[in-house]
Length: 265
Image (cartoon, rainbow, N blue to C red; front, side):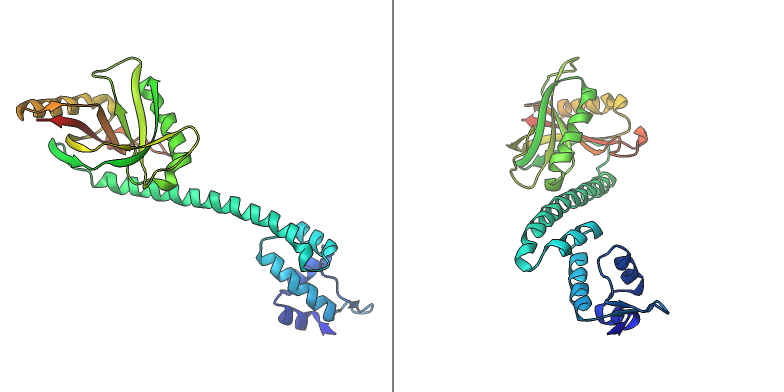
């Protein structure tokens, strides 16, 4: 028989943990000295301790370990408990992976916003890209809820900054809008569409500041198009390098928005 100190060293369980497991009825010493209260552990306790260490490493709670040790007689009896635990681990893994990808997306968005171009208009080439999107007809301010849904369902696949596609030729009270997010590959998710968005030649200008003042950037871009004898040939895109913020509100003076208009010479 081993004393509690010896058993602790052999089983790799702390003395504190052994006392807790005794109180919980998980690991009771074979003998307790009636005079001094010293605990003594034998071979059966050692086997049970090894099982407890394994179950603890697999993330089972005290209540679950109590149930397992009370009902399982051999390894085959563990299958039911392990299947349930595996399902919990897979759900948690999916949740943590989603958190990881949303954090990465946030950090990449901040980094990209810091390196956005200055206010001068220019002509750029954009490659076709996969996007996840939600298209709707309504108010411009309603786009935030669409982006929230995209982030929840597709952030782990994100491959760039979120953007909007505006299909109307001008300002509209009930606008035809598509909230979009570039993704690495085609995916399927309920409530959102996924497709390959055409690339091409675009006129681009970066606006720094609130959305209420973005009209001046549009005017500068259209003036530049006229000066360079370029005509627009499709819907406008707004890429939100830095927007209102996903958690804490951002000062609108720090917003960074790139406006892209497809051009046809």
